[in-house]
Image 1: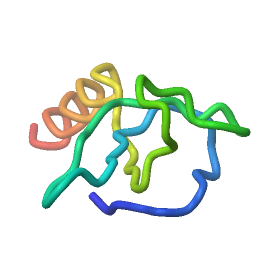
Image 2: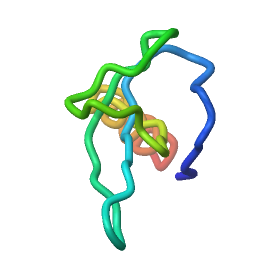
Image 3: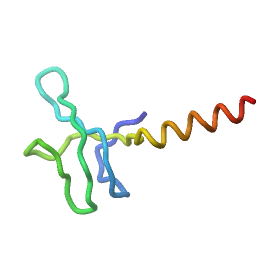
Image 4: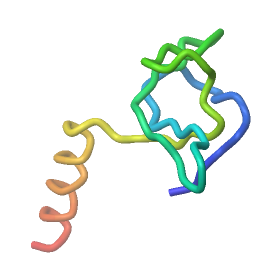
Length: 68
């Protein structure tokens, strides 16, 4: 998965990262199309897409079907 430092094109939930010392602090945040909604007061420095558990299960089901 790639990390991005721009604004997401789609609204949704993302894994967000904020620099802290020599590492990062991570939290799930929501981009509502205008601003970030997170537990942190600052906007995230980086973000990446995350899949919902339902989408991951669907993906595994598809792999299983293809394997048969």
